[in-house]
Length: 390
Image (cartoon, rainbow, N blue to C red; front, side, top):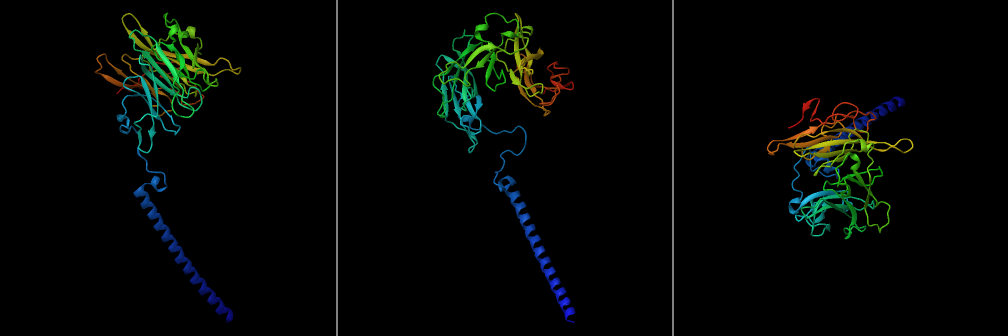
């Protein structure tokens, strides 16, 4: 009898305990549901990024976005280059003033989302020189931004492009007042490249000293070799002139760099090595035309020999071609070319895309670009024989 009563009491206690646990479980579920609802509501009101302290995105869709003037409307001059002057991982603007004698660095302010009006650093040329271009890079590998300033004498008869390197001071207070000398070139500005794969900035172009006689082959193109990396602080020369690593250059057609030109140092055949795309000018007594040469990078053999660039393709650019830009237009992993063309009156202009019919980036296969074939093809303006002009 006692056992029976004990069993009954135990059963009743278990029932009450189960009911209590059930009520607690329902309460927990209710609290969890309320918390989820509050979390969802907060996310909808403030945005998920803001909820977790990331901050709401300024631009919420992908495409070409009108970002406004970004403070550049308060700065008088022309943006010539971009570079990170103060090491904050944001690009700053290098602006040439309206007199084309001063290059100013304007810092990007992420808080105000604009460029500062007052320059953080300045370089100035003599009054008889006009700046034509600025290249921003760490030329001597000391972690500070330097400026390669290209300029031309105000004399109308001058055929010389002057170049000076202004090194950034180690303390970040500005640029050295006395620039380093650079051998002059023709008015066709040299192209910035890495000629030997040492991650140092070199230049490719035609030295003024070699421009007297007409070019017969590609050997006229020379390299401005970087002398600053690993050199002493008392160095006065930034570059010297050496032969360009163009394989069989004497057998390749001459390339008189156009003035202006939009040559590039980009990977065109997908082997993860930057190639050379050169825009050349062929002048005759009655007319002139723009042509191009593509030189692909060649890896050294097992003995470390034979590296350089070999001629892979040549062709003519369409009449009225303007500046060329390089990028992956159709997202297939290859570098395409986009460029404008206009008639002689300038009324009928088109934007053209030359799609790179090529292997994806860093693929082990080697195929043709801008057409079929093993490295040879025409510079087309369409994909699969479709015109891409618009």
